[in-house]
Length: 329
Image (cartoon, rainbow, N blue to C red):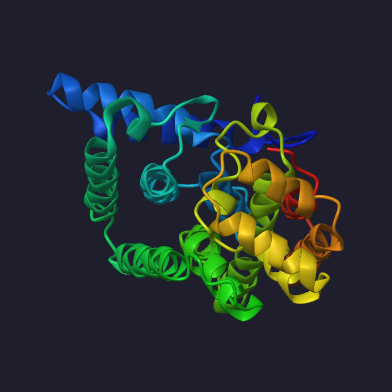
């Protein structure tokens, strides 16, 4: 039984997720042994399959009948998962991360070149699979979203070491690199169910706000989480000089001596700089500030779908949003 958020189970979409697993494996199948081994390894990065889950839940929430979802939903769900996994592989290269889903990253095992090429292969397969749909609407939406994701990553990379980064720019970055694909997952799930424009917009707004909240919590866990629970390398934002919301707030509101101390730690190459920076940030009000902003986004996400017909699926979507700020991994 699939569990996505604490006690929330997803029996209604378990068969669809199984189809995603099968289609993902079939699409990536290669007659080259070394390519197949890399593809097999990367499957462990798929975790909770949040984006496919949201394709299916949005598809069900948008339907006016009890008819099962179709192959279009399964294809879209597989495509968004491929794009997401590709971004994880590339992120690990950018962050020089060694652990992902409690296992070794591709770049750690096989080097950056193999990881970059594997990420490219995943993107290529995603577009190849998406082009099998009769309508090109989904392909264009996925292509546009992937462009936005890349722009977000480029913007974050450009602003490494920018200690004057504003909250406005931070929110633009996390929308682009994380929330845009979650938003598109919800929109396409509803679109594939022939939903009207208002329903597609409502579910898209839900996905956008859940995605933004998810990334803020991810950034909080990078500072205050436990690697065993989170299952990936932590402290990478501090190590790479990437300001996240708690750090931005701290540099704007803490005592000047503490602000300067954090900057000196961010600029240092001392082996204990990450631990010292975390010890400075964790007890600060800036962590609570960031969590409160995440909660505001969760509340917005719930409000976005309140006018959808009452159903078990709508309730699951609401509970999933609430779980975002409670998660530890």
